[in-house]
Length: 235
Length: 329
Image 1 (cartoon, one colour):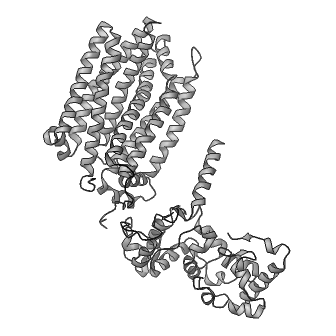
Image 2 (tube, one colour; image 1 turned 60 degrees about the horizontal axis):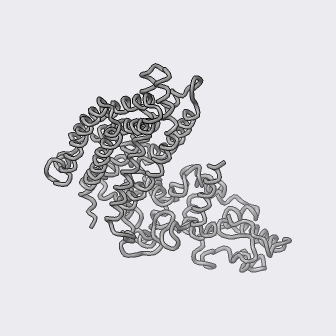
Image 3 (cartoon, one colour; image 1 turned 90 degrees about the horizontal axis):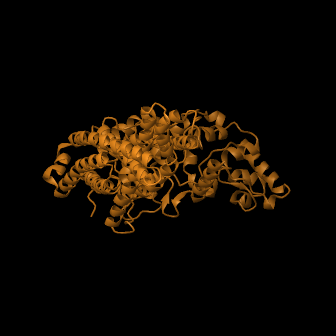
């Protein structure tokens, strides 16, 4: 019982600090949140500009070729994600990807929005576009989801859970629920190009059918009892 | 691929106090930790020897259980006094020590498991007594072996922390942390140097127990004095051989630090060797004359100086190992 009590205390203590270990200074993956003198190039912005592979010290494979995307992606995962995630079990990516049926392109798109997910508990991905693709290739390698399976959801609730729920909550205060046009047709069209709505959204391509179902479900939630105070989702 | 530089970048924030403050605290708290550890581990070993040599007769058992009752105090004392030097070593040498700890992560974690089990074992034995003491001897042996293993993991981690050139090979062949530093030539003599010292200090623990019993139960106190004093002498004699082995296993330029290249290191080594040999003679004389004052005051006084000079020598050695990478101040 003492182990359990201390374990949960420590777990909460670490969790409330996320995405930082030192607030507004050092991220949980040991990158500095802003460049400071003497940081050795290990701020998130510098790593994004220079790339993980040339910057990180503990990397064996510094060159990215089309053949070793997965292996290099694994190394990037090791240095950038593994302080909080294991591939398969603890906060396992395999589980998240399977749950949300993300194919490789969707994983890559979602990696661009890490900082917005889960109430901002994660630092954003730091690295070049090619490195982001390699990481996506690695994360997709556990149990690859086909593009068809990834686009198969027809039910509006499922579409929301698979594509939106990591950043958006079912709440009158949430930007999606607040700003989405009331008219189903206009709303559905507006969701065709997400980056035009907000440049930091992943560039997801939902089918017409999926968008229609999603809008219908969102409207049904808006009309549901207790919507104004509801805060479900968000995880 | 060759790794150009694996040593983590230091946080640009400076130390919150002068370097020498941490260094002094590191050496002082390490000294206290090692004394507590020695009493605990050496006491456990000599308790087992006493029980085994007396073939389970009451005389040997009494020593065994008297020492066993002290272990549940000495073990947490070791841990508590160990936390301080652990923190100071992280402050001063974090970029080396953290890194090697990650490379040997699983054995390093196992230290906690071993420690917990050994602790339960010591408690179990301390609650047994008299005729029906069940498996006390076996449990004690098991706990003592676990504490030896903990020391072995520490020797692995700390030698690895001083040799960054080995990091890449170990890490990239097993990034999951199942590594030790078995290829290090100083590993075994260094480990034995600490463990044999622990047995000698265990002997002094028994001498202190003799002092405490001197007026109340002289016969028993004499038995403790003789047994503990002999344990101290045998272990310290063995230590001279182990020490020579350790010195010989060091890379040449580091060995030479203690043989003239570094005057302080050389003097400290001479103090250590002279103190060790002198304490053997002094203890031998004290045992012959049954002079508890010499055995319980003078010998530990000399040994204290020896341990302190060894602690400083250890620090000089670490700085020598890290010299290519790290020159503070």
